[in-house]
Length: 124
Image (cartoon, rainbow, N blue to C red; front, side, top):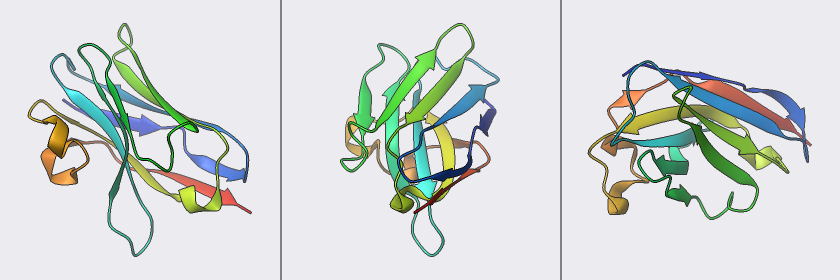
């Protein structure tokens, strides 16, 4: 599976952005998630979805502002980000794995397919 992330940019606080992650292969039985990494910080989980059934998971600080969704026909997973804040500034990565269990969904090492990062910068 190859993943291609897109949609980052420079916005002001309170604005919205939509990130997309297009997959080259089937995502059936996969968990697909978004992570982010700010300079000098560890990569952290943002949101994830089980492709089968669409169960979603969120980092507490983005719940209610971010929404992860999938387009089965386009084999794409998206992250709608509303009410962006400067603390959301980071490189955002999509990742996929067929071996993730619920207790490890937030752990980067659980994923073995990664897209390239897309930069999100939120100015105050």
